[in-house]
Length: 101
Image 1: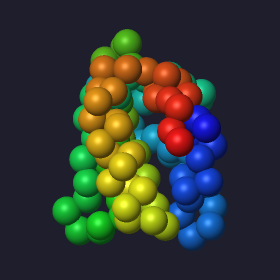
Image 2: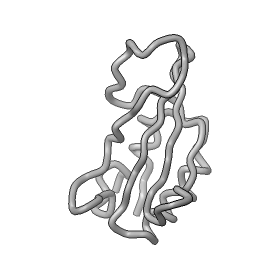
Image 3: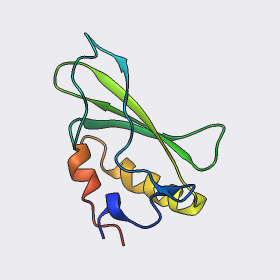
């Protein structure tokens, strides 16, 4: 099963993929982020919420974006964190399609 469609990729019963990206730096915020655009630069746990991850991506024009993924299942969030750490430098499209059994 691909990560983006895994049944535990939910928060309050709603799907959390695709992430909602927020522009954080770069020349300008003119490119709408849709699909699998962007390369994962960083992923980390929230220091406040045990079920939240923060993802940072970059796109080719120098803009950077951030998104949070909140999970219903804390243990699943930890599994996702470990997998995402292994795929820093990969595209979001690639990451969404990772086989996550």
